[in-house]
Length: 101
Image 1 (spheres, rainbow, N blue to C red):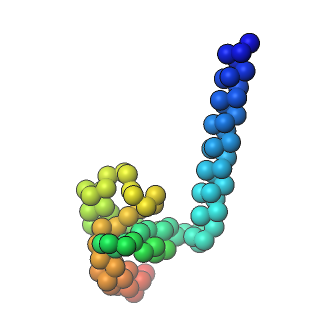
Image 2: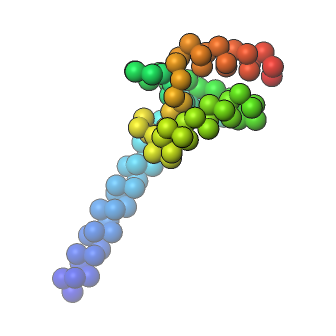
Image 3: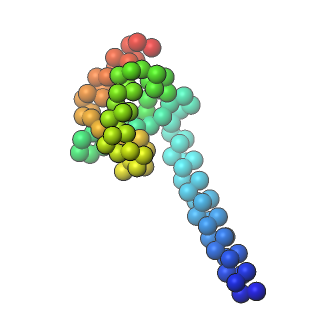
């Protein structure tokens, strides 16, 4: 009986943690419009940018994603997609991509 009670308490604890994580993720995603996603860019301090999903089809942006995969794999330090380039280069690229679309 004590083992079953301990397992139930452990399961409740896990559910509470997953619920709080889901609420936190939902609150973070509210500031990202539908059809967009957030990325973190910068060499030192990272800055957050919200960009359209349509950029994923562009070869120049796919090149940045490949660099991110090489540097970080799937473990991004900011908790979101981190692009390893300077902010100036990223802004220049996204301005050009906005003109194309």
